[in-house]
Image 1 (tube, helix red, strand yellow):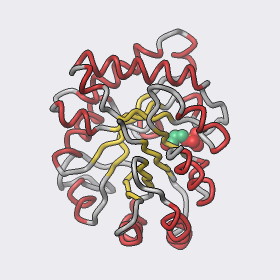
Image 2: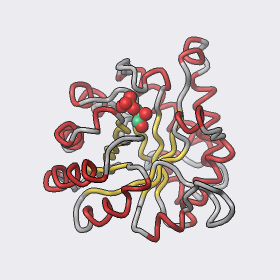
Image 3: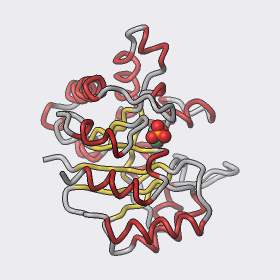
Image 4: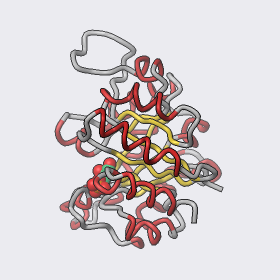
Length: 251
Ligand SMILES: O=C[C@H](O)COP(=O)(O)O
């Protein structure tokens, strides 16, 4: 049975005090078991959050990383630095990185491989624009992103990869994809993974949905056959809301 992974992506939000207060409120209520709670925070907060999360059911993720171990890459953070401070997961290829910071399918693949090389679990983001959806290109786009992101990984690494389907037109807009539409893309994404590995491997992959997920709609999304969790932005910023999202994964 696949675990349920609820990840809160804070994006560029919170002071250190707010981040610490968030963890103090969430950690006592994180259920554990088959539901995994992940906080994806800005780099500056990661050491403090990792310290707070020690011994708890909450994992800490970075929101990006470089694929090189070190070098002349001003402003970047390497996988070595993340594992050195105890980070366990890393979001790769978020649509905002693709849009604003020239992230490509090729760099997503390099970063995904580098994550595994350093013992980090990647949360690989894929998703289409509204124009691509309206042109019926969703699965061409998402399928291509998935294939390129996972290229060169071992079967074991594929099973460990978390894929986050985030239709770009649903991010931060309040327009959540219908659970049926979201599940259709997640199911077809699993089919693509089966084509490049095997059905047995694909059936183990955690596929999240992201895009205006909130406590009011997460139950319906998690009830779908091929949605194994959520990557949540706005609704993950408040502790009470994030706890409700994680608790939905235990139902
Ligand atoms: O990483 C999270 C996604 O971008 C979704 O953000 P949102 O929940 O604010 O729509």
